[in-house]
Image (cartoon, rainbow, N blue to C red):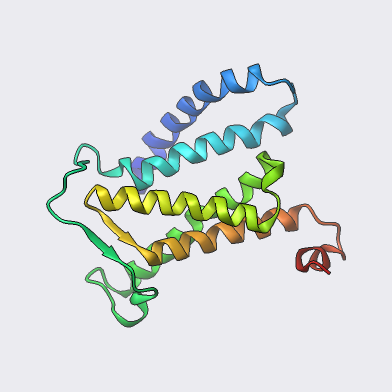
Amino acid sequence: MLLYYVLFVLPAVAAVSLVLYLPWGLAGRRRGGLAYHLPRYALVGYGLSLLYLTILWYYPNITFRPEYYFWNLRPFVWVTEVYDMGLRRMLEQLAMNVLMFVPLGLLLPVDFPRLRSLPRTALAVLGTTMAIEITQFFMGRSADIDDVIMNFAGGLLGWCLFRLLNCRPGRCWKKMLGE
């Protein structure tokens, strides 16, 4: 499955991202160099990848009139119950949910200066993960509070990475902690 994603989906996402980004990038008032356009192009590509991985992955079996609805509103249920997939697969799922949102927490403050504060980035990340889980619920897939928590944690890690990359040595931790 990973090989399929790398060989077929990523190149398609890169091409579609370029087609979507070019009018936006060329029509903008600021004609920056590669350092200006690359993170914006990356955000478009990331958004398309996220859409594919979370919503369109099950195409053509997407329906908004499913036979059943499943949701888990008990946080950290995975700690007490190992799902049928087994412990190893479940831990991989949790890690992937965290890692999947690190780029969002990193790219949002890079591309949108208004989102450089932690509360604003956190709100944007939370809104994104909630929108995905709600959409999945109405498609008949599971909506899980644990996914929201893990995605949110990944977004916060991405924001921390953004702050670390934008700090001067020696002053970074003081700046991050607001001292």
